Image (cartoon, rainbow, N blue to C red; front, side, top):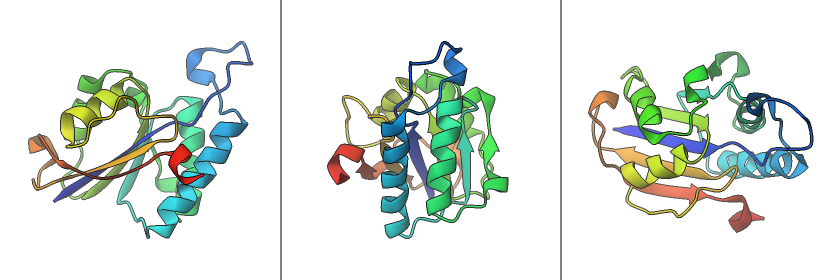
Length: 161
């Protein structure tokens, strides 16, 4: 069985004149990352590996959440290819995951995330909000063969504030 946990980066700031890739979290994004991190900690959440987009806002979100679940930050995998807004790109990246990994967490971007969870899971979302989490389980033992899984849970900051 494979478990995919997809987390959208936190709310980012448009205050600074920087490239999109360099935008950081605004205070709400920081607060929501703490909120989601605590909720995952309370669920006794233990991923095998965490991959994050190299975009500042995704990396910042991944770092904050990882600290709550006692994930060794030196094991955090930065993947430039997760800086995408396309679900097909995300699906290809996920399917290349090593089969020794059972629980994969990715931090990435919308619209790719919403489209991906709608394609792969059993629950339809109009939009996965910033810092939203969606968990999908697959009966397959190979990442390459995942197709349609079961949406096990979702955590959205507005639902747990």
